[in-house]
Length: 302
Image (cartoon, rainbow, N blue to C red; front, side, top):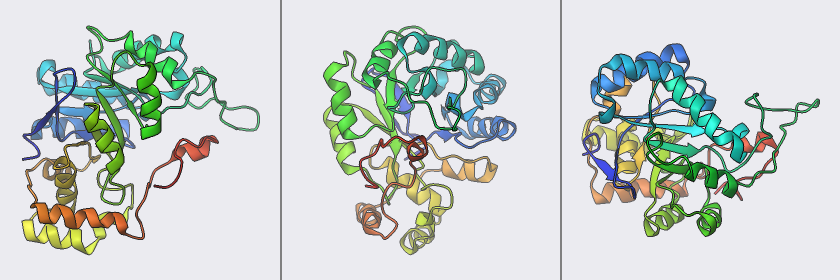
């Protein structure tokens, strides 16, 4: 029962299984998308400073009329604010943008620091990204100090198992969650097993594949959608939730926002059929902007 489900974080708080993602949602579109989602029953909203839509998301939350305590709101620390002295200021800015007194979850967006700058993408005269010297373990240590009335839980995003292992050696507080790309083409089974062992919740971004991803055009997905009388997107979201990951599909289309939240429960056999898509010719990571930054965050496509 995806829309009614929630997962317990290691803090004891509940994170709703299905949330609204807002990556690539323009401010003028995301305001109405968030209102539509909340009206449809969503209580989990995900954004980030770099999406440049926090203000519109926050206004929609405020205008929805839903009590703040009923919502689970996540935003993310951007790469230009990784230095320990910049972390608190970045939080201040995001809270101001969102018009919120606290976040339910604050994530480190990427395990890479740009040089501290007011520019989102600081570049040199050759337009090359200026990489900073702050290690992500230092950034996380600064984030640990934010926990309290204004930040209920902290976590990371776009971390590999190797990076999580490194982080856990120095962290005094286990991340409550890690947000990563997950869909049937890229199931991240090893990472899920690691996180289950260490009681770290996993949120799947791009659970339908990236923009123009062929995963929703796979015959097995289409056939399964017809079998359950739902959309291909609902099949993929059910797969994600039944693997104990929360999912944050992005949409600004009201009908899709509503249908993505409707309950679908797949059989174990159908879950296994979808798992086989990891053997597809398209299998692997679909999103890696770090290659544009001149940084190799991920060791390989897989």
